Amino acid sequence: MTGSRASGRSPESVPDPKTVRWFRKNLKNWGQTHRRDFPWRRSRDPYGIFVAECLLQKTEANHALPIYRAFMARYPTLAALGDASLEELSALLEPLGLRFRASRLLDAARSILENEAYGGQLPDCETELLKLPGVGRYTARSILSQAFNRPLAVLDTNIARILERFFGVEGGRVKSRDALLWSLAQEVAPKREMGTWNLTLIDFGAAVCTAQKPRCSECILLKRCKFGEFGF
Image (cartoon, rainbow, N blue to C red; front, side, top):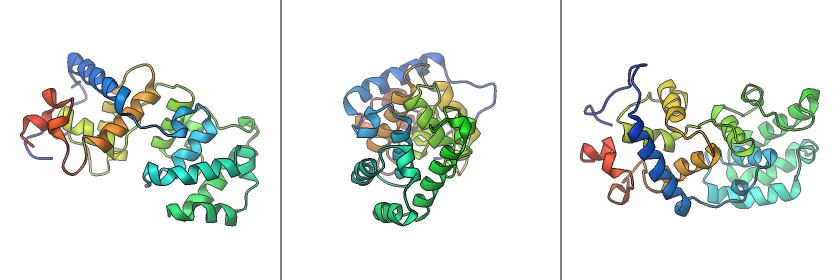
């Protein structure tokens, strides 16, 4: 990001509605042919999506895929995961790294099962999901948008990069905690099919609007992108 771009924006400032509609339309069209296909994306099962989101933390999707399949075969339900031993779970997840991942998954599963108010199921409320070990705002909203069709945007480094470049804003150093970018992500999102929209943005950021050597010449957003305007 350079000094040519706006650093943040005032609370009263909002993106131009026509630009937002154009942004949505082009990304939706891109997603129809380029969005990646994974088993957890074809499911509305809150448990399966929860497991996938935990495995995907700091992990490439293709790397997580075989572990996800093995995990769901061994622990097909929340109850089955709750009965697992930490040792066997750690051994299964060892190829993904992050040693704390197994204990957090197990602790979260048992927390849900021990809370009578949840009825043995993942809660469908952001506030309650955020109480679970290892579940942050991104993971909670991913589960809610994909499993429960809630109109909640997510924000990761890929999505933050798209928003900053296209709209010419600049968030803080830690993107996942930046109020400006979270607000903008929600503001420019469609009101329906939010889960699909979130996945489209993630994939677009990974495939086109990359951190290094972005494929601007092939980008369907280039015509109105602030990043492209500044000649990057």
